[in-house]
Length: 120
Image 1: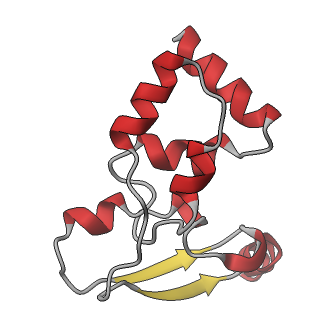
Image 2: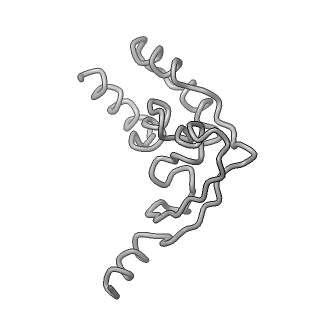
């Protein structure tokens, strides 16, 4: 548990959001992992975004869209050996598949979500 807390602290210090980039490389679902498990099936993603810029690869930690530069970014970090091996084991260069998902933003910002809730 302390190793995970230490890893989280390192990502915060380095300016990486642990719930986004850090979680993506350590998860089999996030960072495009879910898309990989679907093995080429056609996918449509309906998304509610509170992410600045509405980047699909960051909404919900990107289960259907990998972050293109995540591998290089994480390889550049000075991680302790116990975490380096964990990251290297789960890390693969993210490339967008040819049959990537169609992403449709249902709501595109926290402000829109609040306005929609007020109208409901």
